Length: 323
Image 1 (cartoon, rainbow, N blue to C red):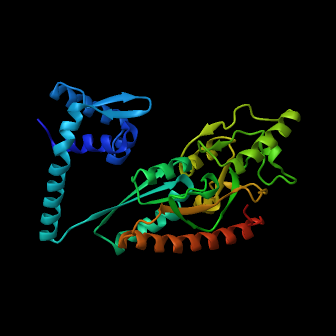
Image 2: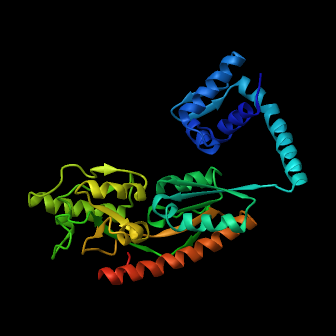
Image 3: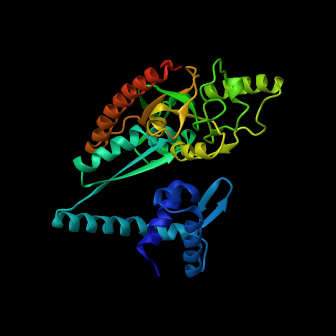
């Protein structure tokens, strides 16, 4: 009647109190998890969890299943470890959750370099919106989180390590009406469709709002803001060659597209057009060998990204300061 995946599903929903969070931990979609849970409840002829807008609450039937699930899963995990150790191929998991811009640049670089150094470590890199990272670390979905520290409050639960700020630029397709234009300002940029991630820090929202007011007063503002929302900045770059869209991105994200001439940088930037990345970890929690290795590689990638950004800004004739 029960399969191992059923027990892991029930345990994940119970531990995280939400179908969405449990699905993320299990690496499946929320609709798929809901279907599996409903199928299991149908086989048991009873409800395991009461669902509500605030999350899930385990029922008496659910408690009965959970009473033995932890012991059964613990024994199965030990069996897997013993078999792997006997074969000499024991692996371990390292979960990392990162905000979009950092996940697709220095975080991916560090994770890739770990592959050769730690062949028995399976790395799961989750790219998320900045606002989701603290919650996911607190929910123990990952021991390490990376985000723009401007969007994070002063959380006493975390140990925080600041990384180097990453300067950003506005990029467009070659031949765009704004490309190479002199005396360009943010208000003029607002006449064109903007591509952004879903949530941005208030330090970035405020200048945009002021520029849109100025553009509206001049009668030259694009109606929708943002005109296109996509959570992956590297994927969003693909919109530039097919439209007059303007994309604010870090130089680390745009470097390859700039190098190949797929996009060009507008001759304007301000210090707030930047990302201020940092690492958060649960306070007081011991750090393992794999986690420490990743952080060391991340610091190296962070330094390299800063050096590359300085070189690009010099080539583009743009300032490197970040605020």
